Image 1 (cartoon, rainbow, N blue to C red):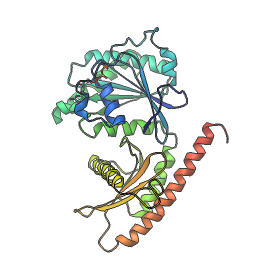
Image 2 (image 1 turned 30 degrees about the vertical axis):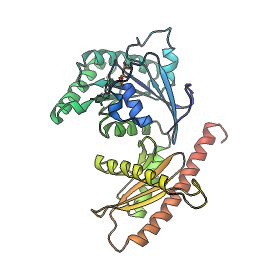
Image 3 (image 1 turned 60 degrees about the vertical axis):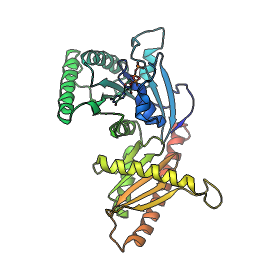
Image 4 (image 1 turned 45 degrees about the vertical axis):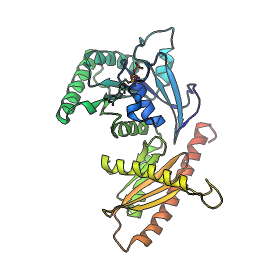
Length: 327
Ligand SMILES: Nc1nc2c(ncn2[C@@H]2O[C@H](COP(=O)(O)OP(=O)(O)OP(=O)(O)O)[C@@H](O)[C@H]2O)c(=O)[nH]1
């Protein structure tokens, strides 16, 4: 995703990032959207005023971060009603290594306000910094937080509100997985995209396909089979290797003339396939081709991926026109 400017554009899909002080909001933004190494977030300064960053991917995305020290309803600093009515998803970060009861009280107040302004808002709760908890304790913590949030909402008469919970850490891929799922909820064309990816799977002997945002390693869509985190990790790392290699070799006719394509067969027999798409995206597929069927299958894969890319271009053009009111 490209960093563009610093203004909040109402037409973009907007994610509002909230949570108490030091819960990890800025670190998440830095790691996911700016490729900062997790350890380099250790001594980040506390954020003192609301910040907005815009990113371009399949959709234009704005991430607004509200500093934890702010009183949510502090009218002099920002117009909370305007802000909440413009967002698609509220992401609330809870530090699971800290005492979290006050965070849960804060969350309940925010949810009450958010749904009063925008009833259809997506509410996403990150139970963050789980790297410091044992496997068993992670699940206990998640259960406890879900139970308490449910009880708080019941007290407010908001029992029907849908909330998604994610266990996350910037030190592994869980934060990318969570953001992938959150961003996908904001993509209007997601069902059509998933359909296309299912078709691609069916006709191209792929076992799993992802449509990745190359810079952030968020996947904006995948086929309908379940995501296994190890497959995600292999594919995300394959993007890094491909981009590094691509930088080493100059293609005929100069850079950027041909889309990047890379195929690699791993020792365990799994073939990884990457093809550059539009708007900073890449299709990454995993396949278990048998020896001997590589060449024919690869031609079929190339052919079908080219069709997928054309469909994606058409879909993108159409949604752009719809947005501009041209259709
Ligand atoms: N162990 C661990 N530490 C984390 C993780 N994410 C962030 N941190 C640390 O938490 C501390 C606070 O992170 P920040 O990103 O500054 O928190 P913030 O929510 O932006 O804080 P304010 O700006 O004060 O609102 C930093 O030292 C980070 O390195 C995580 O997943 N695991």
